[in-house]
Image (cartoon, rainbow, N blue to C red; front, top):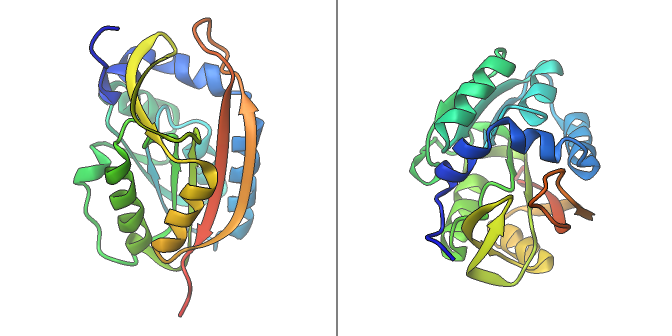
Length: 210
């Protein structure tokens, strides 16, 4: 296997092919629909790993929310700005972001931590919990697996992936002080010639109001 590609390299290369491959992920849209039903009007939402802006930012701004998306791949930021002009998109590595505690009504992170080592994922979950307002919601999705730094091929690209089993991930959300209020697991096959079936888990967690 060749050198694992960085997330920026992978998603700069995939561009809108990624959006096309995941456009029929019904479990993702169901999780977003439930999030939309729970948000206050004009919520401030942070989308980490915003990709092309679709469907997450697009659905959120259509519902009247104030969305800021970050992505590590410059090409994705360019596409998202063109496709969802009502949201703001910035280029950045989530590990380098900093916000005051209690900044966001909601944070979404769809499959955007899979190329981070487990230790960095745990650190990020703690930071996301701090950034939420009391009562705020984190919607986190990943491919659940008991792996840390395994080399795989994703849609034709060599990557190094890390994750947790679904229950272990829920435990880490609770350890960060969040209450898991929704969990959905599904199997999905991206619409791409180099993709195979993969398990998905969608977890929504709320920051206590106290």
